[in-house]
Image (cartoon, rainbow, N blue to C red; front, side, top):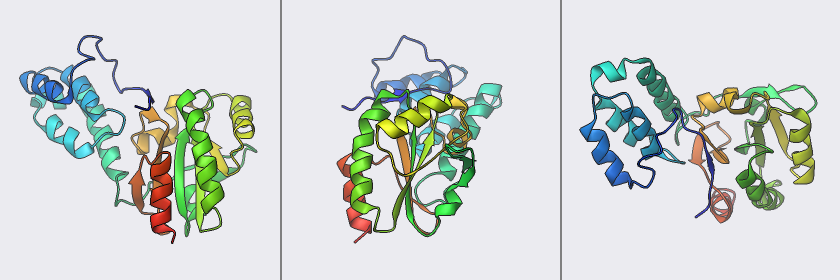
Amino acid sequence: MKKYLLILLFALPILGFSQTKEELITTINSKLNEKETIRLIQRVGGYDPDYKEMSVLFKKLDKKVKKSTEGKIFEHYLKNLEKSSVGKVAPGITQFDVEGNPYSLQDLKGKYVLVDFWASWCPPCRKENPNLVAAYSEFKDKNFEILGVSFDKDLENWKKAIKDDNLTWKHISDLQHWNNGAAGVYGIKAIPQNVLVDPNGIIVARNLHGEALKTKLREILK
């Protein structure tokens, strides 16, 4: 199974990492009055979280837990996940390109755009990059673009990775690492992740990697 870098909203206890999803849900239902249960709900979401599944679990929590600081932060996260789910209008992103000029997702409206969240320091991202290069080569002349959104904090490392991996599409970042502004609005807590946006700005897929991305693009870019 492909491994991804995962940063959770809260630090997770070491105990219980081997639990299955079913076991986690059982534990959650037995601890609805504890703030620490929010961490377990985050774990249920995993790499590619389903906001509906997590929302059902969150709503079961004791009112005091939901109204706590941790609860409010998690509820905000769930709302951002919902707003950036398939079928929704893609939230706007405006950051700086490698030359220091502002660039927006809106600038690519009218095309299919894969918004790729990555970083130079992320080994799984760098491993996935050849697949993106291959997909871009095949579909770039068929109304398809990629917009790289980097979670880097060092400009030179970011630029070097773009050059070394031959990533010839547009790249932007605010160089704020995990505090990247796009991470919040898209509910991104692991990379590499991506969203596929149609010419009208609607999200049509999330987290397509390898052959799954090519298969989807062949389907929609006939």
